[in-house]
Length: 107
Image (cartoon, rainbow, N blue to C red; front, side, top):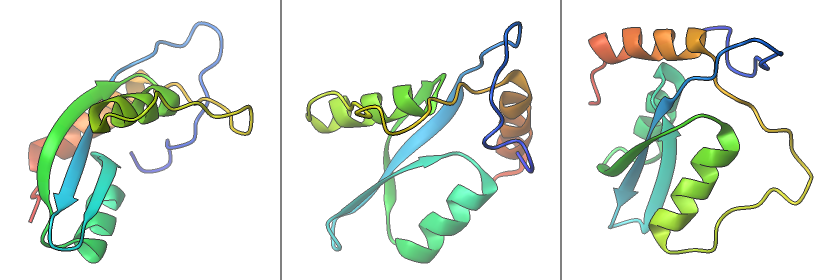
């Protein structure tokens, strides 16, 4: 996904689902939602190297991912409050994620 994160979809672009994971480190009391992506894996390994994947899901936008994460944790559905712009994932991002999944080593 090099270079495509943050790309906005325009009229006529296709939306795509991307894979997200929730990683938990019980000893540290930390849960992280990470989009499956090289940078996400690097951050997770650097911040919570002992975490285990406890849940995975797909989402078509950053807002949908945050909502699903909150619901999975038993929280109220996430709302942005009008401070952010929703990013819908493109087919290009999904293709790049599939390519990464083919060579991914979760450590």
